[in-house]
Length: 405
Image (cartoon, rainbow, N blue to C red; front, top):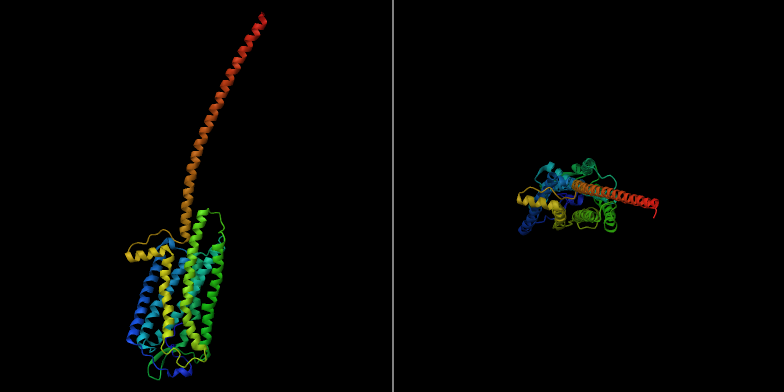
């Protein structure tokens, strides 16, 4: 998590006196970092907003997976609005804090909450895909249950990150400037508390969820790529469903992999800072590792929406509509709504064809019956004629026998 006072500073006695030399950014470096963050902020604001609007405005996007994706976009927007601008100020002010104690707590707290919400949302998405693909005949997660899951996700994230509201404080350094740092005393040990809390966050909101998702997606891949989907669908429909599910799974696996890669460096930074007893007193005094770690984590919020557009036709249509200021077409999407609609349409078509076929059969059957009746009537008439002729011949022969030669 971002700690605006942690780069080159800590709550231990050895660094609380600010003995490390202040790093002076060059003008070129400041411009480059400002430009990088400006691009990330712009892309994140536009992309995540379009994702939320696309899901909200289109009935064909009303699926549990897309609901979770919209929540992920909301978490990314929260990071973009509350946390990224602070990094631009750090480029010019260093770790000097000028925004007051309340903003000091809010920035760090809500960035941590957003990251926690993101990883738990990805876990929920993985479970939804796992349940739908591995157990296709079981009852799916309903929208009501999905909303409850989202509430639980935010409650857990807020609860786990609540200690930041206590520990994150503004203190005055020996140089007279204010700094926003973690200070766990007097309620907790200022040396061990940050280590323990970092370990808890890494285990509960990074390592364990990612390992769980790896297991679930391994089963999903085995199910989709090696086995047939059970059911009574035709071969063409079965292949189409498998292709769509594979595309969704590829998208989600890419999103999860990028999340893991982008947020890992900041955890590595914190583990080095808190757990390496042999680190130099002024670890990363140039702030290159610190800045790059947070830049990667924040860039993840900007990349996600464009990954959705890359893999998902409906999101591409949403981006296209936003760029051209047109309405978003409400047609094809990876959702149960579309599946039900298509199934209903297919059923009605099949019924129509069946009715036509049945009607044709009834007409054809009627013709056959009439022909059969006509043939039977002709046969009876012919038999009666033959019987009459035989009777006449018999009577004529009998009369000749009585008269004699």
